[in-house]
Length: 105
Image (cartoon, rainbow, N blue to C red; front, side, top):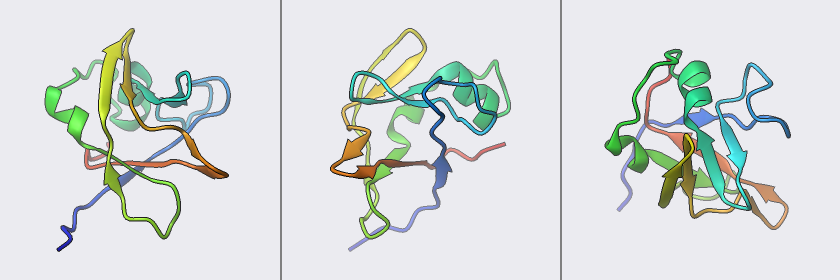
């Protein structure tokens, strides 16, 4: 049985994190997916002072192709304003699509 949840896409930036206005702080941190919290707050939540809540860590999901089910991401650690997950940014030639249940601004 599958649960249906509403998710919102989190946008990757270019090689330089946070340069693009559409970047939500998502980046490749040594071959692990990471979200730079200050940029996520500013660009996604529209609140540069938002505090990281522990329950946010379980509200991110991943898929590598449009045919895959989205799966919960596995939190690894938080350091230097980065939420780092165990998942890799790439699976073969497919770049990860990251989603969250946190509503955007």
